[in-house]
Length: 377
Image 1 (cartoon, rainbow, N blue to C red):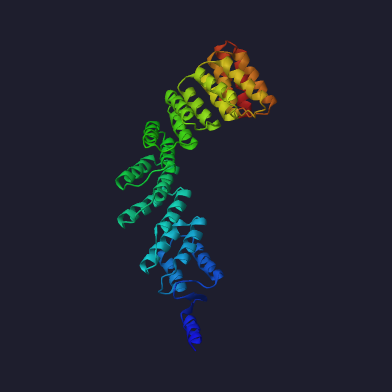
Image 2 (cartoon, rainbow, N blue to C red; image 1 turned 45 degrees about the horizontal axis):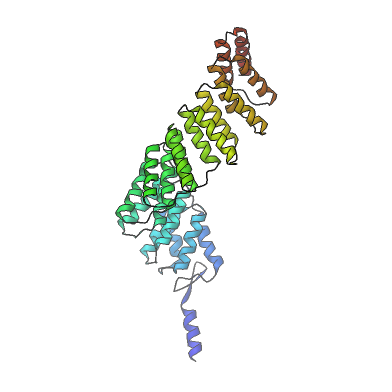
């Protein structure tokens, strides 16, 4: 009968290859068998193109797998953080005529980005350019992000520049990834230019890109630019959070602007923004650089009253502020507080306190601290 012939034809369109039931359209009938293919690929500790090809050929023969099967395999490899194998799979499937689209490339590029493998992501990106693959914003974003995670800001900016040539649409994620790359590379001027381009392009700013730009300014001590970004955020109704203020206060500290750092801290209280220990530490550091030992101690006291867990670095900064003004008695009190709170005293702690005593002509105290430091080493 016709129905019997159709059923026979359907059965004849399938064959077994190494115990995997595969239809001619590339569908693996048993989902468990598909997992076996993925498992075999994941067992490879190193990238061996011939071995990968053997596994795939043994599973699919000479037939190109169905797009859904291709997607399942690539997605699984990406989730398992093996984009190298996924890329090799794409090469093999391209050779046998499988349909490989941009979504598959993006899976691999995103996986490289998450692994911080910028060189591999960039190589794949350039390979797509050579093959005239029409890339989307997602592709560019993932490549820029991969470069950014490894502080390869020049590469990230270069990829950003190619988007203009290819008329690719830039979004908030694009700019955030590029600014983040510049921030990690300490390139505050380049970060500001990218943020400016974003504003001119009428792409909405968010707290992530603003924080990254402020942080970049912080690393360069560009406190004026940092505060201007905060003003722009307020005007653009972008929420300022703890990270925003902490980065701006750090910028003020490195720029020797103690008073501006204190004002920002007071603003946080007024706006009911949560103050973390990192914020207090940044403000205390600003006071230390500005020689404002009394304000540094007041901030330390405020942090203590807020039940903050003070660490060695914070105490060292406060002792350093006292040392600059030869306030040896205050430095000794901070040492006592550290001992009481069982906070570790390191070489920096003792050195700053000893210097404070020497500047304050408390020679005997300095000798005792030196002896104590030598015993603790």
